[in-house]
Image (tube, rainbow, N blue to C red; front, top):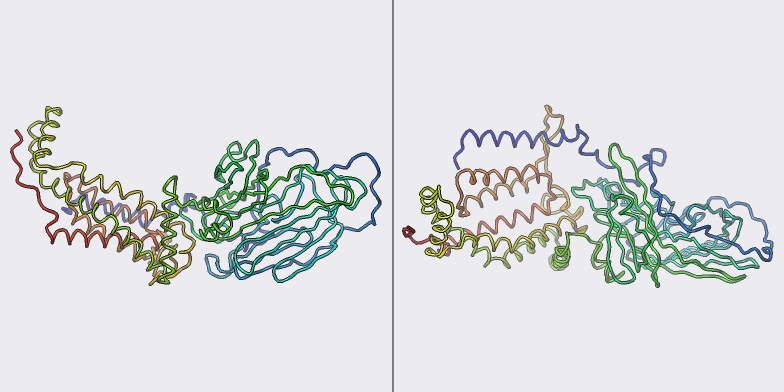
Length: 575
């Protein structure tokens, strides 16, 4: 390519954009300031919240028949706050508030925040309802008049409280949270006890499955593409997902569906709630203001069917709850249908992306390094498409060889487009050249490469995993920064994306191209454009792209040496 004045101007503009785009966007407010993990935010400094009401609820939750008077019970004063209880295993720690009978937060023991200073905590006090895995009545506060029992063991916590409703009715609630020695599943049992002498009717009780904030708010990570939504599987086996930012009309499901499980997911983590029997979905949403940004905090739960507890009788409920990373093996162990919450890619590509992630995890089990696993997986995919790529390269070489004759035809028949097309088709048949032969094989590879890209971008397994000089395969491989005092900013040095760009230029120079000079210049500028917009790409992705480019260069070189890429025969006169 000739390095002329236009090319120099284009490169200069690209460099200015590279250096100035980020500070300019921050100045305009298009890029928010880095998020502070919610677990580290002091309650007094919490952002303002704007609640969005969920659909209208049924009438009062607890109703008492008018017949015989309630048997008098010993008056008990409102209970005093108790210290929180921690229930933990090898992978997570549940922080339980005994007075509320709820889980205020779940700490992920093996996942750290962006600064790697503390474990990530799924804070369940951000939404409309304080705490998770608890029973409540929407719009009608309860008063805990006494804690009757509180017993903590190595794998469970059992709590019994006496509760007075807004209507003055009193009942006892026995709750039990149980976890295994490892994993992210919690089993919850509830028992509503009627200590009175008359039946009690409950028509609007909800079991709170907790809330989940966007990943950037939880961890402080820089997230390129946020993924935050509610997922549920209906009792009929149909899967639906609702994006957190949708309007009320689209977000709130009306009428509320009957589901076998429901949950919330962000980029890397999810919470899921299921029960032995299908239940009616409960939804709520709160907005937290962070500067000019608005973060959605969505809550999921189970609205219990109306029931009556006879005098001296009780009613029991049981739920299972997953709160942890989006790891396919863990999700399949919880429920075989919950793999859909991964949301690695769009539509059918999501199935392919999950397959590639499964292969990546298996490779890690063999070699012990996710960096090496990415290299192996990239090579396996490229070897799979080696014949297709070779055919495309050979076809492009043939097209390049007949370009002089095509140019002659264009000059000769420039005033007769219809005849020009006819002559060009005759030329292609004579020379046995397929004008789409170089494109179709490449199109076959695009879905696989997009799925692999999505796999590496959304895999929690790569987060904070070092490889070579990169400290985190889910973040850019920055090794140093160059201060730019003029812009009040510093330019990070990311070796992998720079190497990727250089290799793209080399590959383009080696690849046969049948283009006019203007198109060639545009193609040669593409690596620089991609360098600007993908400069902060996670190192796992740039590692994949770099290895893929190296493979392409080697393949082209081998084809050139072996003579598989032959020039077309001398072009016959097509007149």
